[in-house]
Image 1 (cartoon, helix red, strand yellow):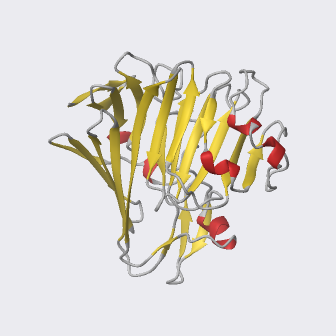
Image 2 (cartoon, rainbow, N blue to C red):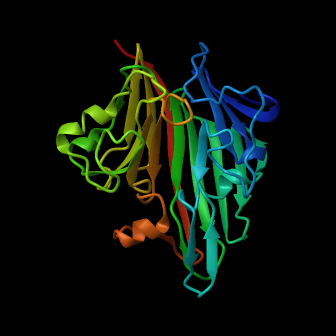
Length: 307
């Protein structure tokens, strides 16, 4: 079932199955703002304010709603890039598609949303629909509308509510090197360093909430061999399935309180790691969309009861 509704004080569209209810905000960057079980359990990290704090093209991402699930394209970190045609292009902080209104239409049991970049050089689309098992699936595509390469990466900024002692299931962490991007309290290692193997198990667990507790992010540096990730708490396991043939890499962000007084974890499956096309390319990762090229992938959200 798909129907129009509200999230806080803004228009939303709900996609609902027998297991899950997902609320999207097409006019506010296509954000997934809420993902609940049929019993009312909310998975997504939410901003506590009663009014939605909208993000505009030049606004500060972290100073606005900064919650839920935003699509990051064509970068996470802001950067200025010289394109293959010799022109210079600015890439906004946490990308562009989360900053502008999207088109939206309901086609049967599919919610189809799309947006052209502010520079009109690519088109991004996602189609949300129930899967056969009560999960919710999102099919993605991005198309380069130009005759030159576009440096780019896609990352899912997927923020879940944290739960004390809950564990993230990231199977490849046992076999992949992990690089720290930041650690607000400095409890892991220095930014840019490889995380010591003896600390890898510790960084998968949400610690007790404290306003001074660490907030940190790391990337797995090798391509993923599996596409299913979990977050287990109480008697529930949230499940994120991704197309790891395209979303080849994974970032994980755990905030135990230091960042904005929030308590969350975030999966960030991505086409390339290290937060910008520049950083990715410099480290030897592929981070371009070919001229007139198109890329397709999917994600699926689900949960199960656990003992």
